[in-house]
Length: 184
Image (tube, rainbow, N blue to C red):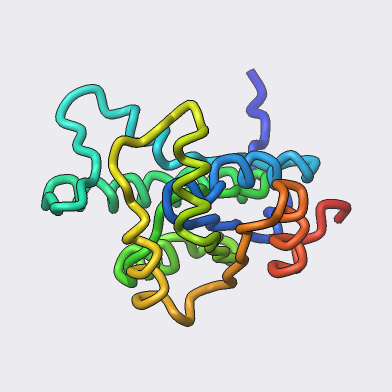
């Protein structure tokens, strides 16, 4: 049996799309990926759900094991993103990244292509409204992460205030901010 080459010209980069819960990450990430002929949406929450037993989700109170698993999810997202990028697919990673250590982990772990970090920063009350209206509704108010993100990552990536933007307008803003061209 002949081997089929998997890799080809690499993708022009990878996008890390972040923001607090309810900021629109998953919706915008899927819409952004759909604009390209070859792209993937890596939803980091989905990676966490692969853990069948022993999984721990973050809590506002803090949990060392949940914190360790945040980095495990990020590592797996970077491994997937690197693999897809090497095969010519633009990876769009969707994760809540509000701490410097977490962001730096992404920057050092994904080295195969340029990383374009984009932070969606709608007003916290708008994020809460979006969260309350969606199917994967959270019972915890995570809006305090908005201030943590602004304080710990003042110079990281590009910020887009998506408070009053539609999904398509937000995708357009991401494309402008990253310089990525879906037609290329």
